[in-house]
Length: 424
Image (cartoon, rainbow, N blue to C red; front, side, top):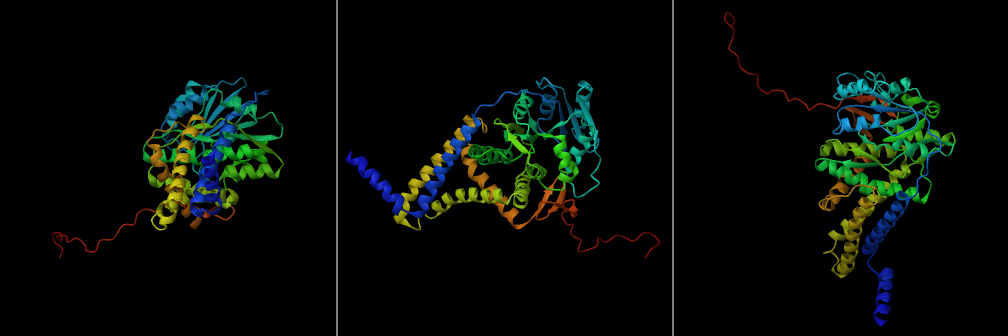
């Protein structure tokens, strides 16, 4: 009993008079465990059963290639859904690499699948995804539109879960949090860690504390009249983040949004480290210009990861506090490993191999670099175009241009040529 009393007294003394940096690291570790507990609670929560199944038009903008395109596209043609639905693929032209696959699916499912060629964007101030969505929406038959990125991997009952979230008549849009389930190569694995282990747990924890209100454009079900009231896909596409623009437009009209507990699987394309950095910088620029409070929360997340780095780097500077900081770092390391395990077991993310524990610091470094770039510059690169984003998140049409090619250095010396016959 005396040992327990002395231990409690020592712990209380450390909390009050201990090293400040060690206390901050320990608080970050405990907050991370609390975040995971809230995220698991929301993820494991009950999902209601659908009472009404509206007819749905699935709009799939397609650009470039995808690693699992055939399986992903075919899955949308074979959904288990009692109401009518259609799938409309929108591509810019026949030169797109996935155009033959889309044509084959349209021939195999003629009553369900259609393909539309949107042509090159006429308005440089509209992002390419919204340009394709506008072309697909003009052919849509039904009043509910499911916006689906080309890299999503649905299960057979995904439309049933979205329909269950429409029990409230005031709900005009429903979305799902992405979960990267397939990744090849080091940059893709870093992307999977950032999405599954860093971003998704905070989204689920925030939804557990208050009703979810954000929208994810990865997979989004929305009423057509809500899109029309927001100005249509072309007007939404004038923003870098059209899903955030739609969320704000719905909130201004007093409409609600909903969120399904189960994430949507995504296949990460083959990336380079530069592609990964540009992708996260573009996403953070969208947050900075359109959701500054969320952008500030991302800064706090990064600060929470930088505190252990500071504690580790300063162990030799203050030898007297080495023991306390060592204990705090050990607790933080255990909490981070537990977080990866819990996220995988709770199906918020995927079960990571043991080597992912070593890659997590590298993923945080990428996120930190993208955050610094987003804070310094609002120019982004997307679909081969370089865009300048205004303070309100709108794309500045006068600054849209293809990425600059590497400069060609002129030759210093002209090559000597033998003069032709008859010429001096």
